[in-house]
Length: 420
Image 1 (tube, rainbow, N blue to C red):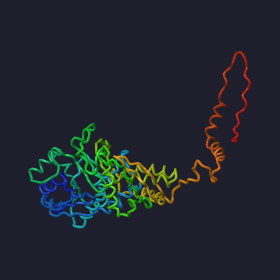
Image 2: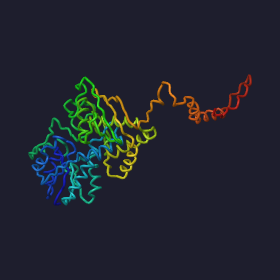
Image 3: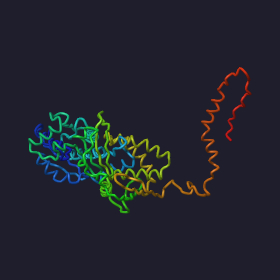
Image 4: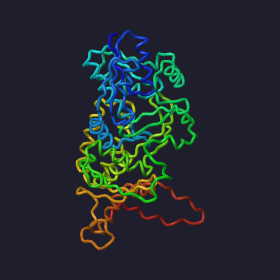
């Protein structure tokens, strides 16, 4: 091989993969680091990759595309995995892997590499994308072939080669951060009964330490897409960042989930998604205001299928395109605003408004109105109850009255099927 392109984050795994690839392959190693909102984590990432032995490192700013083409479609679909998880890690992988393939094609690479473990979901997400955009390139997955068996081994490998890493034996968590969330796995979290330590969390305040006064935040949508916060129109990246800050200071968006990995095992993850939690709550409430009952029910059937698709890395599929087409139609009237009240980890819907609202006070009021004929309800109920009534009458026809040895009862009148 002449050139291997590695998906690079600068974390423990990919930091040691660079020298490992150099030691085991007579090839150039080119790193691709995707900026999807990691913030300070990307500072000096190119210099670090080169210091670890990489021949080149491309740092790609994918934040805008991440929000517009991945987060917003997922939000509009209402996709939530395992009843809680807002899919922050899952949704980013197809974008990162596609850009890695594009760089590999542009420089004429001979192979692709990633730092995903053989136990996790990410290996599937990356390699399904590779199969779509660079099916001819072989894939090197060191965690599936090398003799490093644990994160402790990885730390020892890094120390032996003087490779600086942020992880320590005391805080050996596996973390993944982007604009949407941060995940925490490993270490003491592998015991599902262990309470996460306070210093684990990075994006959100502890609810007990959040402000003692509530804060209201107004989120506006146009056709299902968030466009403004508290009256200020914001670009997609700024909008998510703003809501992360607002939700985070009120302790919003923490979940502790024992989830079902694609490879078959259960694992525990701690996720912080403050801005995403606010957006999902507001979007769902606005849909409840403007969509009819049957459309909402249909969307609720699609949402878990969409979540599975994202979780399993099946983003680049006809199935996802079909779901997006359906969701797009449902979002035509999802325009309006929702007011959320935040208080010590709680998100409370305080109000909602839309020009397309199906709620009409003239019909629903308990006061006097001249648009609804209450007497009409009687005929509706008789028709609505007709199947139950027919069944009851048929059951009555089929019953044989018990014989009475002392006297004969008068025959019962024939049941009537008359509607009114």
